[in-house]
Length: 74
Image (cartoon, rainbow, N blue to C red; front, side, top):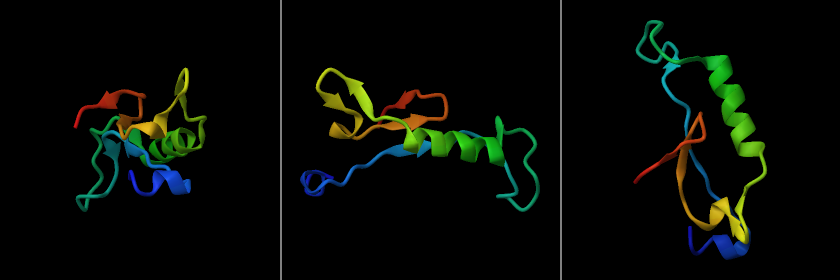
């Protein structure tokens, strides 16, 4: 990341949450979000402004956020 940032590349990590999907071969009905909602939230996250605070861009530090905007520790 540190080598590519000066060239204009940015990085963000995203956790979509527990999605109701067929990933295990059958529909998981216990997930928090259906696939369409999870995809909509992911796209909105990646397309939103990246500003985090005075003089700080979110891409200036690598963090993972979930579908609720919470930052996850590494």
